[in-house]
Image 1: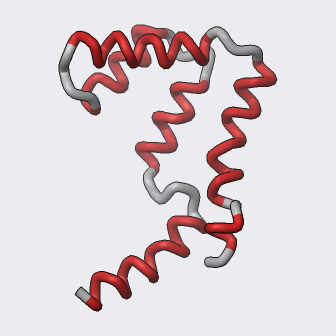
Image 2: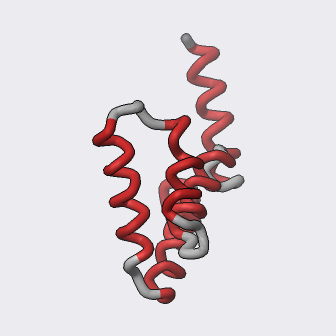
Length: 94
């Protein structure tokens, strides 16, 4: 258990330094925000990662549509948000 704590404490600074630490998450966020990604392309991209219920597919479509309805300025600000989180005071300690 102590070894696990040490590993987590070592890994946390690297994940703060290197973005989310999960390239898949970063790709999904970027594809969600990108207005050039069509609804069909987006749903095909995220389909393997959610529970295969009809409501899940509809919810993912609504999420993408929410971003498609935004201005380019809003999308630009949304794209900056993850980096602002990684550079926040909580990650700055590491």
